[in-house]
Length: 433
Image 1 (tube, rainbow, N blue to C red):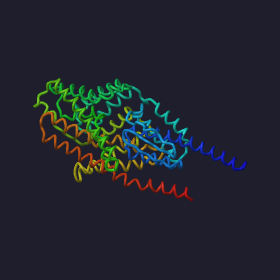
Image 2: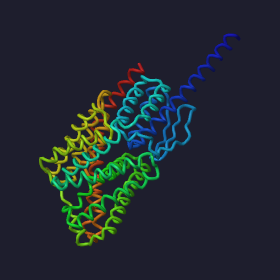
Image 3: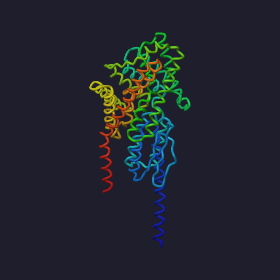
Image 4: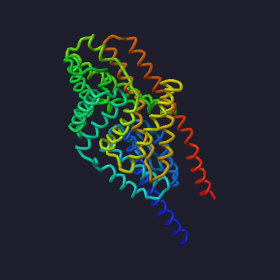
């Protein structure tokens, strides 16, 4: 009787320990899910990461994850619906994303306790921008200059891009920690930048195409959002993919609204607008320097780690040359596909080592070089001058470019995935034996 009683007490104690462990693991995994979602990572990738972590700790999990909320069940422990819409403070800084993935690498091998992992996660979320206000301003100016060299590398382009980029960086700083102002920041930025640009064009101070606006507003252009949404749709996450795609289109219209107000205030005529709405794209030696400027801008503006910068530059050049080769061999759509394919494979291979740069950090910069958001913005803007045929063609170009990039992500993931699956199968086989 005493033995049975002792055995019962041990079982109760074990159940308490298991319940506490599951509770701690649930809080840790839910926090990771929210953090990854706030960084803009696809639902498909987040679900895969969370399942890998729970599998490593030997706990069966059920996860329901959409772009806006998350529900996780571990054993008998179940989380309440968690909102993932709001950005977690500061997680847009790439150094935090890199450290978040280092924590994930430990969790995927169960080398850290859930309680310790949650503590580390909170420390990561509380980190500040590495370079402060100075880094944001200088970084965004270099960011705009680098893109300017890709779109129209002229002296005027660089001056205008740098000046307008500096203005946008100040708006970003003023809106920091002001949630209501952040929501309308794309409209405010588009309004201020377009007003200055179109006033300069009207007075004859600025001569050039509509692409002069793009480098300064590129941070708000939802090219990555649209591509991620299309990727989620193709992966079967229909609700998340559809909502992300609609959000991306909404941002485009908000930017367009800001430009429209700028045009009305400056009183730019339709004839002048048609002249400035011509889209040109020039490739040469200067864009190669533009990549370095752009990467340096990302390093400062997005608070990147020192050891991540060389890998980011490598992926940028790989994506850029992949796009150029595709454009030369077949055309722009194949160039977008090939650039995305090379970007995905190279970023995935680089990110396989915990000591290197995570795939998300190394590839997010390359999305701006594939410019789906820029093309769509130009297509919408040409509607202002009632150039409907050009607008329709540009919008079709946007859609097909997004499809090409998404296909590159899918094919690149399919090529790189067998290595990861083989690693998981090998681990499971060792555990079963």
